[in-house]
Length: 545
Image (cartoon, rainbow, N blue to C red; front, side, top):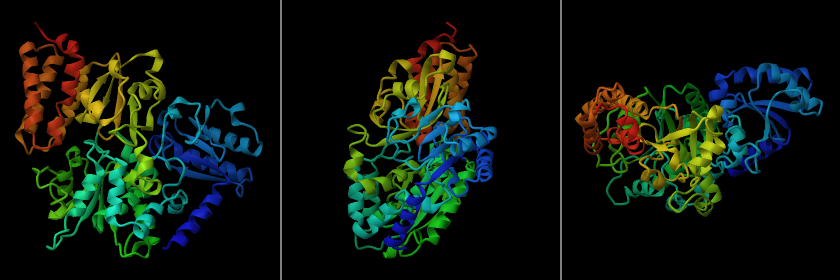
């Protein structure tokens, strides 16, 4: 494929966008709420109304407001309908043919859905979509719709107009940090892998891996991106491969994500057919292919060395570092590993420039962050906000606060590796450093809201049980320490502990944190640390004196 063919596809798709299209979410929560049946009834209603040549119906990815699904949007007007049922389908179509608003006949809320204009629903007001810019707008199984949304323009630009060094420099200058948890500078990681082989000695093959092993309880960011816009991740990986000198990529995705796997398989097949994966991409010397590897659901395989062991067909357990994957990774070769959201940012950065991206967010945390907002909050779903947005704005404004007039008590960020942030600190801006100061982490983007009825000792115990069950067992501090921590938390919860046990709990937390082999054990005590820091009275209230 050359640029003329790419632009011709984009032009055809843009012409199609001028026509009326009813888009129905058919992934994630909407799919479980009968979204596919709603889409089928919409298609039947369009045919019955004789609008087949004027109105189309499309299944699209996540529109964000999962708690109100199934969601249906009529474009180009941008009217969004929530909680649509199969009975509503004919009425929505009738409103188009009669040129009247279905609001007059249906008990549905409608909100303008364009991300470029102010919204009158607070869930959308503060969102700025980069990673999610196509989610809910394109058919994830149609590569031409992705191309119509400027897809693969970034890949063409780097292959025909940029050197690998300039690509790395662009990502570095953008300030993009890894969205998988630690927030390591993406450009620095890419540069490290790219430099391997600059010496005259023979250079082994290099690999690029997308870590889609999303295992945090309550997290569904990566799943939604893969289900809604898989080509974005593929393009980001291809750009990264060109930058570091790799020709083979792997996407390691959880087996519990069958729809994401299906959409990825379709996307890879379509990209190969159009020559966007494979040999001499865009008539350049660059070759790149991607294969899927399906994980069995072990949380520890989110750790990069365990993930690579799993790809190699071994038991997924971590190994000591150094050597780091950039030097000796998959099969002993230099390997670049980033997560789904990190790769999904790359095409837009290349198209719009490093300066554009770096002007979003805070001084040290650039760009946006995708969160799965869940728990005791009215508006649950997927959001993308600029770094620096406060927890108050996310929980109370966008999330609508706790149902039935309740009060939020805390929000847990970062999954089992994170911590619980009290409501008193909700004015904190969401960035890497601020959350770390509060005893939590950004993590991959899970945000679970808890109300006043939540017992924080139970929360710490739940996450410790999760880490205990998911420990690979390789190192003693994690294997035995998480078990003992869980037992101590159970003893406290049952009212059988004394102050000595509380001292043991804190001492053991420090031991596990500083002596475990990998990030699972090192971060397992974080929920305990944070709940002890902010909700110590709840522990003391359960302890015998």
